[in-house]
Amino acid sequence: MVTAKKPPPPITARHVIRRSWKLLIVFSVALCLLALYRLHSQPDLYSPYSSLSRARSRIARHSVGFAGPAKIAFLFLARRDLPLDFLWESFFENAGGALNFSIYIHSAPGFVFDESTTRSRFFHGRQLPNSIQVGWGESSMIEAERLLFATALEDPANQRFVLLSDSCVPLYNFSFIYNYLMVSPRSIVDSFMDVKEGRYNPKMSPIIPKKKWRKGSQWIALIRRHAEVLVDDEVILPVFKKFCRMSELDGELERRTLTYTLWNNSPNKTESKGWHPMTFNHASAAPQKIREIKEINHVYYETEYRTEWCRINSTAVPCFLFARKFSKGAAMRLLSEGIVGHFDTAALLKPSP
Image (cartoon, rainbow, N blue to C red):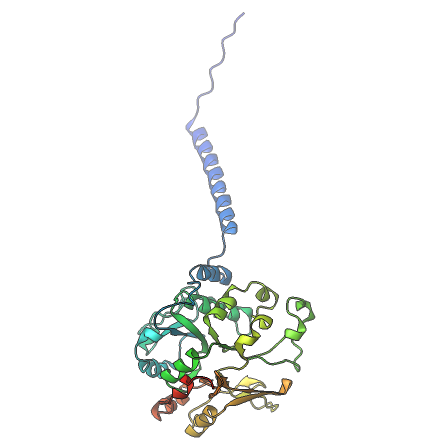
């Protein structure tokens, strides 16, 4: 006996709508999972590490034999704007054109240097597009410095690199500073033994052995090859976020700084906190004080009982080309009194005896 099959129940509009909603929910969940996967599988475009990686990829390598006018890259590490831009405007104005210098600024993310934020045309558009948020005394400051060096290395004409703060002023004109740096085959990196504060952590050994532990000013001047070493380093920085390859480069460094800082180490509680850089105001930036800074020709490092005589190619030179920290009033005095004037650079160009 053959029984007739019952016809399937008719598909109602409510059933179609319910099934469509289920498919839509499943599809949406799949899209969310895919987005989360891609988000976690790709580097953070705003992290300092990804910013540095992109900058590294654009570096002009092996430019030792670069033919053409060599440049000094002025690298400004700023909180936001450059309050002493009017003084630097005069400095760069007398540089004889832009063929022998370049400017890079690491500022707060999103801050743009234009007519509304700076009085100097030399700083227009010179901010890094991939700047990061920097915390004082944190490793992010080192990452910001490395971003400056990496960006400047994209230009093969940049052969010398000077790191400056937003409160730095030049003590000489451009010609003197250019010749001072270009005739020296060495980088200038402040370095002395740290025996008082006990900041060395034994856990950093053996990557950073205690016998190689040094302290120094962050305001450095590097030749191009050493700037590449600083940017490429992936061994020391993860250990203590600090460039430290003295064993390899010691013979190629001047163990001093080019930037003069007046330190306040007074124990008096009514004064500024100990070991903090003091700020020059209009009164303290007197011509006599500036002359005294310019006349310094050696630095004594008490912890090492070492005197570092300042020389370039065996020729005695002033120790400092820049100074910090200067207020606007102090910078105005330097400019109005012509303290940053012309100096003879012929002595730097003489061959070594």
